[in-house]
Length: 185
Ligand code: SF4
View 1: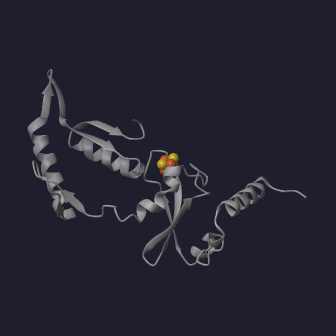
View 2: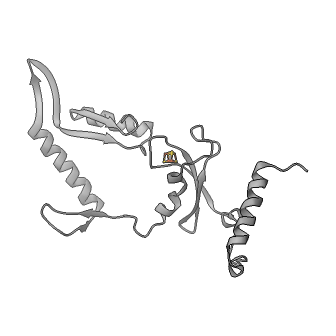
């Protein structure tokens, strides 16, 4: 009889688990096979946010919650495979410790305060303007440079091509010369 590598490893795994677990743990009535758990879930095609490889993923959403994530077999980068970090993404998405609000700690303060996104974005804009105005250099060694060396921009792996394009356009338009991206670092 022909036996595939997958079936062979599955049989070894099943017999090893069976011999290690106490008999009370062998039958679990609450066990739901993955294919049934994901029945009726919405498929969301996305990209792993962790590193610059940018592996394609499929997230499964049901009742306002992500209930499963797997590698996208049709994605040209990873063809369905995920590293251990990407494979554990579901725990990050649903973690109780995941930050979903803006927290701000004022200089010399020991406390974090909850703030709105509007407050955070206007603070960032104000500070960029203040730093740019204070450090902007129009002429250097007789040449027009129109740049600031007081701000740097570092893009993250979660940004796609179009977002990187817009980010670099925006940064150059305000004179930022130190422009870097995680994928290159
Ligand atoms: S699955 Fe791993 S290799 Fe792929 S993007 Fe995520 S962290 Fe990077």
